[in-house]
Image (tube, rainbow, N blue to C red; front, side, top):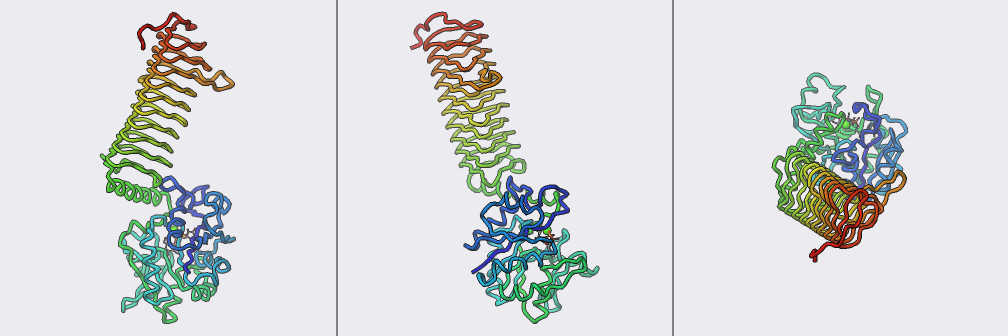
Length: 449
Ligand code: UD1
Ligand code: CA
């Protein structure tokens, strides 16, 4: 059985943040989630997460998906793994050790490290990367015969070692009993910490082989120590996600300016224009046009919809509906099939029926608008009386003249016509013309059929 240990107890001093490093969001989710997800795909045993600095906050964010081990004092990565011994000893015969600040590692690479140790019959395998910028990583020191000798942390390097460009990525697969036997013997480093990396020298010192596999994609092993690294990782993740959607049939006019969280789903032949941000549980259908300048969060959009320069939050657009430019669909906004919200509109907690139109400068909140109704420019549902919110009902095919104030609670009947500039304070029956301040019934609509 394979056990996975994820180290997340460090303070992350270099982030200069009140938030524990591993909770800093990447692609909209705490970075530690990525490692946890990768671990869960590798083994059925829940990963062991070592927490320490900000432990309560980390526990709250991560929840029940992992087994927690607390490292009271952050005495180094080797010390952190040692704390997992009671949780794992006897239950697993191999242990994969990961750092929570390396969220871009893929499952395939992790499997590769695990397999390399098994196949090489080694007590330890490690992942390395050859890169021009060492980013403070430990250096992999090899012997003259090319075999791995040890890892030396950057702070402890000689000038010669410092020039080595083969770096320790920070992924280790270990034989479990060898690990538990050797961890307590780790020496204290000059910095006063117990370095996990010293296991490599211990193994080779005993004449054991340590297998090193080199990552072929250096972006996978971006460790995040600073906010500069965080932005670099964000860019890598963005390119990965965008590439995946383009390969799946989504057009991006300029993928460098499209920000899609990993949780979003997009249908084929949808075109995404620049400066578009798609977040959370957003689902977008096929043949849509999204952007430029769209921010869409936790929303559902059907096929053949259009969203231009607008903001959507927890809103729904059904097939063929469109919004924008410069409009705001707030939580609970729901556009029926073919409904239209043009410029400078705001819709909140309201349903616009099939083909309903709201072209210009309107606010519709806590309302139900019937199919085919037309909301004239500058119409406002006055839904708040200072204490409570009230509903507005607008019947099918109703015509609301420009500049109408609908003082809720109020109902405008099916096929009713409200003259421009009216203030509607009472219900207006079906097929009725009303106007004025306050609006009064002026007769039946003839031939509205
Ligand atoms: C570590 C490696 C380095 C490697 C680099 C790759 C060691 C000694 N060095 O350096 O060789 O090139 O990662 O990213 O391992 N942590 C704990 N408890 C502790 C200390 C750290 O849980 O007492 C956790 C941190 O929260 C972090 C991870 O271990 O998630 C790595 O620690 P960090 O301080 O970032 O190590 P690096 O200096 O990056
Ligand atoms: Ca690190």
